Image (tube, rainbow, N blue to C red; front, top):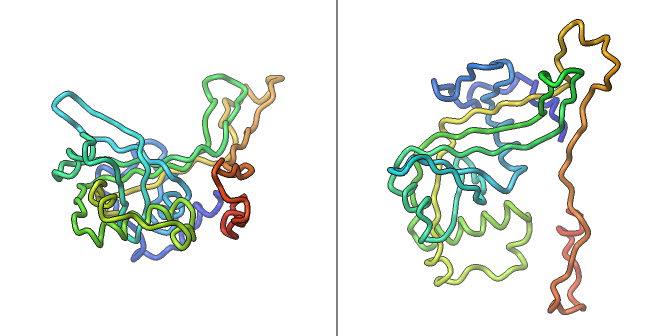
Length: 228
């Protein structure tokens, strides 16, 4: 993804998330962004978030899948999940999503860094309990991972919907932090005979691996051909 788009400050204030003391960056504030278009782009490009809560036994952070739907994040899992059950009570939670775009190699070990895009969301989750609304949310998860998939795959049954806990987290308090570019060096270090620069990272799909019991007459869907 072209991270240069994150330097565009022309987004309207109406599409920005107002900063709060928790989302205001103290270190490298110039890397911070509150524009919804940029925050949405980072959220939409990932599949796993880290959900953090505080418990009586201390803080807990668990990776889990999610989807963005409009102005909310949807998080789902087993009703037996302690993390989801605790989050559903309305306690404060924190959700983070991070992309690693490259390793930044400096001439000194001290100035090595990472290029990244990271969104942090604060808020309180609300459980979605209506069966129809839960079914729509589960379909949104599938569409987030593979757009177009819900037109092919069997939808969740009432039993499957009932056996899944779904939480909604509003995108009302969030911020994006982005680092791009090469290393920052001490002036004297530019003379060192050490290679410096960026080792870029990208995420790409590999060749499809058909299920062992797949009917060979079933063609590969166009949306999967496009993703490969």
